[in-house]
Length: 353
Image 1: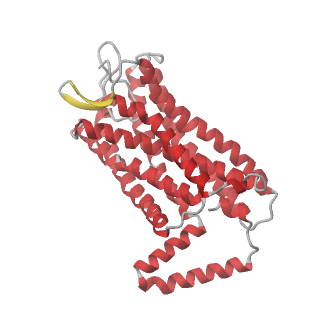
Image 2: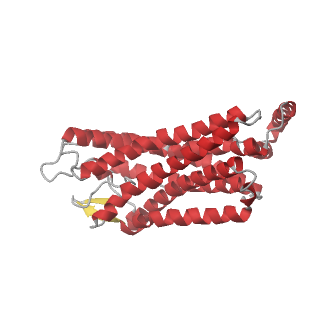
Image 3: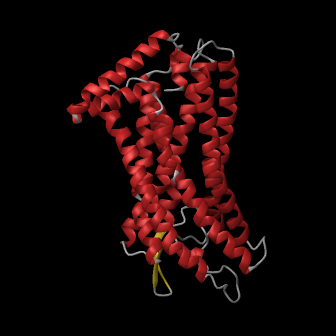
């Protein structure tokens, strides 16, 4: 298989099982059997939880009809990007289980496009939210007044265009081919540079650059919050640490394994069947862990916010009138506690959404 180079979208599950060596292939039947059960199961769970969580966030925000600040615009775009991402998972689950693509060339390109577009856009939106918090907290008196609706819309358009540009090679080169009487949906190109682009783009734009921005911005934010007198200061700092740590723990193992795959495909690690099998197992496990991050985004960025939770409570009261009394009592108690505690500053409120 000369064209079956591993790619960051992992659409070609044949790459998990077939050797890239020039001589007798390794016996990867254990990897094949494991992937046929593990990948569809985890993909299905991620799809269900991610679709429900992000769908609820998008519905609540669009139902509100007054996206007047950058935070709400980012939350809506983050949920839409994650929805695009998870919509592709049922197709990938079937592909992993059947080890063959049966949905045709158009859906092959379409699924790959929304997969990569959703992934990169979700990551870039998190970066925009990080920069927004940095501006509001660290430069509250100099740059915060630039957080207008027009700026929010412009940033949104820029992020989607940037995501489309990075995803464009996937849209162009992904196609269905007959490989040993088995239909594969994969990234096919004769250019080694475009093959390497997959892994380099995933590592640079999907992990390294966002992580560096998060660490740099949130470090300054924490330093600023430490000097503030706010009842929500400690909660804000904990939330910041959680955001960075979760992003790193969920995506770093996958990106490291992808880089090892890149080295293995270039025969820089040697041709050892044991090593190849270990990398194939690692790709499957770390990939699924990374994909579950989209399920956590609604919890981290939306449901921890008091403003968003009030919208959810109002929506639930409209759907389930029998629960309106209980919801009203909870909101009254929450308001009473808020009135007893000192009023948080706008800066800290921005951090906890």
